[in-house]
Length: 500
Image 1 (cartoon, rainbow, N blue to C red):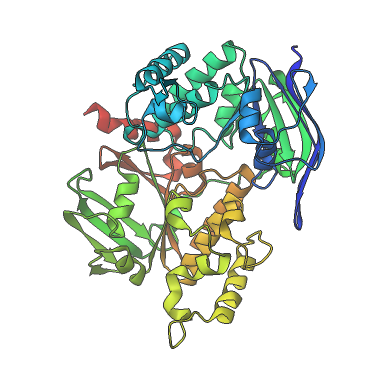
Image 2 (image 1 turned 90 degrees about the vertical axis):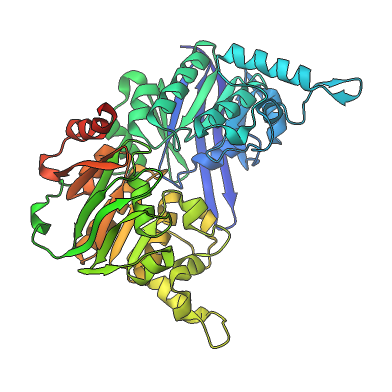
């Protein structure tokens, strides 16, 4: 067993009113993947920001390559050999790959920046890392996966000995994930120590040499590869065993009224005669591979994307939905897959984000919002949905991912939507918060709401959906009742369109 290249002992960090970390320990060895797990709010991000020089610690020691160090800035941490790749990438889309990698460190010739030297230097780095990218290509033209590769190359251009990766696969397709994992194997073979933060248990099983668990800002324990057990890790994360419940059935809703009836929905770009029905109190899952048409169908239904054919009926009456505002008027709420970009106003507080779809209800005579009324209503939903927040005045970006998602749900409940479309509802959310979201969806369905769940995680679809519509190449290739569905059957239908 090699000595740790990085050792953290007794780290504590507090903010006004919050103790984010208390006596935390962590070790990273050369050439290993240490998976760091914990619920949202467990302190993972705070610890990583300390290690990357963004925050300073209140107490404790950091030892790097056998020497105690002070990390005072991100640049100092990078120069030392510790680099972080954040979940939200920090690239400039209008610059080239080479310019992004060496920004602020460009080679100079005769007092002027040398593009030729810059591109040659970048090409040598990419070749060494076996990353297939053109140094001269604009980053904005790259796929998300290739942008991720640019971030990794940028980190390793500092000769990183410890690389921190925060939810690196959250926006990648399956094939792109495989490319990333292959690169991680190369880095491990070269002796780079990797701290890998993820909520995905399948990634943990595949990548981890060791697992370290944080809970409520404290160190719970570490497991070697031979000791790794998913139930054990989940119990360490949440402090209790998770009851995954029983899978729902379709039988209980087959005779209930049809709330949403979509027939022959088509778009020029992708969708071809998509038809489905959603019953009152039912959860209908949309499954399929990336780009198969799941989100595109939802966006066409709510009027966010133009449709070229098809009809939509709500409550037995055909309706015209040309804009998302029309959908809301007809009682259809959409929870975007990218809650930070499209679902929330991150710099606004919980109250504003909750009443956003109901502003007219809380507007006074001259357009001012009735603040007291809005806050009182928001408090009721915060309590009902068990949103963990100091108050309804809290800025939303300071909440955990699971609680941000609950704020979006509260918005559509306040609007009293009968149909709720959840697009990737638990992306970036920890296992404990996932179960809360699942229970919340089931409670909403039990109260008479009708729900569509779009998810790339088949266990999630099987966990919550009464029926599952499977998409491939812009079509629904089959619909399964939960009681007959398996991951194999779903994947067969998802691949069916590729075979034709």
